[in-house]
Amino acid sequence: MFAKTKLPAALARLLPWAPLVTWSYLGACRGRYWEVLDSLPAAPEPSSWPCACIVVPARNEAALLPHTLPTLLGQDYPGKASVVLVDDESTDATADIARAMAGHGGLELKVVTGTARPRGWAGKPWALAQGVEHAMSGPEPPEWLLFTDADIAHPSNCLRRLVAAATGADKAAVSLMARLCTQTFWERLAMPAFVYFFAQIYPYSWVNDPSRRTAAAAGGCLLVRADSLRAAGGLERVRAATIDDIAIAKAVKSTGYDIWLGAAGDGTASKAPAVRSLRSWPGLAGVWDMVARNAYTQLGRKPAALAGALGGLFCAYLAPPLLASTGVALRRPRLALAGLAAWTTMAATYLPTIRYYRLRPAAALAMPFTALLYAGMTLASARRHYKGTSTWKGRPA
Figure (cartoon, rainbow, N blue to C red):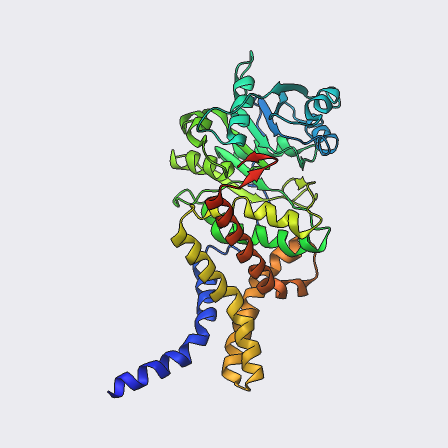
């Protein structure tokens, strides 16, 4: 009887410290995920530059192509390189604008008219597959393929530095997370957190460790060796993947190849190339749609994973400010201390990402509100999945 009366009281005293325990675990056991890895592996340039091809899937990108495609055509790659842009059934002037830009740089451009995706294929893997097929059918098939998106701008030395890093460090794939737009309030609130959550799920140090199974890549800038992609089953293996970059990375690494993932640099010579996304999300609706499109897919479309994710968001991100405010209101110092300690630890891990995006340090304290926003977008993603209303540019996702 004595134990029965004491146990609930002990749990009540310990429970407020659960968020801090969670953050202590994350800090000690998640591969220092908060560190921004924005420097490529140090490696000498090759004595002979391999043939490379940049593959760009583009669907309704007429507005951004005039700003991004010239950055690809203007690559200063010392070896033979070309650009293949796949017009993925666009309903705007994407193909015409792309063709008009041929000659705006030293690289040859080929615009491929994409066909309707076969049964069982997701849109982007099918567009990439068509681009790769065209590239490999030429007289000199490329040894390296750079997959990028039509909204990504690349510095002129990007391909050169990626190939040098991959060949010098013996990596089958090298990928950079592009720097996202943070011009509007909602972008500043959500985009750094998107990168932070990604790194928390896929710590860069784990991805880059050959002894670990963790694999990830960023589709905006993913260089992969053609023979390793072929050995991994090619794009056929990831044909149904709506999160194609992660699927490609997992396929390549599971085949026994080493891969590397990092963040775009700031333009200085010592950092990785300053790869940037030019796509903007001026309002909440755009940000909401971007996250909700794939959030539930990232959880494997499993209700149990959804419940676990939402529970984790509440315990780790939402409970700390609730505990702190409740402790202050009720004049319970221990409760307030438990919440403030967890909230401070949370903000400290988010601060490097905030600094990477050149935002004010105080923005790190807004993470609980951002986490609440992501919880709502994740629920919306699950709802779209079960209603069958998830779309991307007017096409079922």
